[in-house]
Length: 400
Ligand SMILES: NC(=O)c1ccc[n+]([C@@H]2O[C@H](COP(=O)([O-])OP(=O)(O)OC[C@H]3O[C@@H](n4cnc5c(N)ncnc54)[C@H](O)[C@@H]3O)[C@@H](O)[C@H]2O)c1
Figure 1 (cartoon, rainbow, N blue to C red):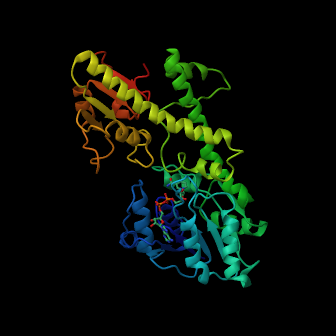
Figure 2: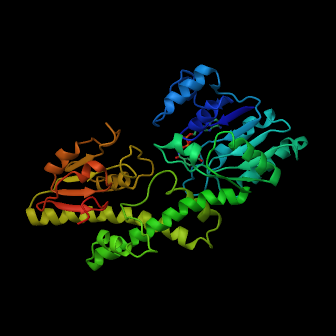
Figure 3: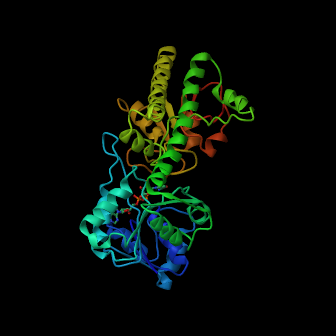
């Protein structure tokens, strides 16, 4: 068996490496020549614990080779980005162009699988695109969708041990795709159809988004009601069937803050809660920025001088270096829009940033008058609460 991956990023590369680890011949394709060169040297261009070793072994054993051009193979996986456009509509042009590049290479008996997070109906659209160009392959190809749900930082373990949802455009396609995943997945394989598998991925992330929106809405209500939201949630969760998530400065990352729009965009009238959750989570970031601005004005009025404000955290969640779609980054940009001075920006998980000059977290905490916790990084939890500072704890660092 020869397996081809189109797209060697955060998902495509580890999956390709894990398949190659099984002794299967893997051909990885990426449009970025630096990515291709790095991998062929047995190195990696992304941060993921343990991955470099697996890639190195695959390349050295001759099981894993990267290239800019696709080849003939038995199984083809599409793992390219699916961002959204300016109006929050999903952009499946990368999936389309990746499919087109392998169209001439497909042969009877091949399996074509999309792993990119995709709006419902994308797999059927790609099947149509393939069969319109290659009608002789009708009934001869397995075409399926299988979403990815790994946690960055633990990808190598989860790729093998997580359950997988696998949906084909017909039952033979589903079965053939399951046969492929059986070669390296130890979690359970759950067969379904392509549309359900596509919707499953979007549902998982929308579910998280809606639950976080509930916590964020509570935090807004509690702020007005004079109730400590962290204590409230802890107490409410003592109920055996209640499990409220934690509020924060908004919702970020390239999955939870993006995927719900794939449902809202296609089903706007029906997806009332999902759409509203996106609005609430976005509004929470705006609200945090307004709170910081207000605190700065109040400080100036009271003390007759401008406050120094520490922006604590830029990442989209605790203890990571990923700033994609980060609400903290958005808040920092918003409050610093009109003035850059009087701010100390902290992000302990990165060493430098192209826009923000970074300050050590302890130094910022000592020097600043106003402390705005935007992310609950572990480092911040080691700081002692200080009554002489204005502390805006949007992330629950002190939970006061
Ligand atoms: N990163 C995650 O944690 C995660 C989790 C679940 C699902 N996903 C989904 O998986 C998909 C891939 O995400 P990612 O994080 O790996 O993206 P990524 O940006 O890290 O990698 C994608 C790679 O595809 C390459 N590429 C783009 N167009 C190409 C083409 N036509 N031919 C060949 N290569 C091409 C890019 O150069 C890039 O290296 C997305 O749909 C994403 O939503 C990602």
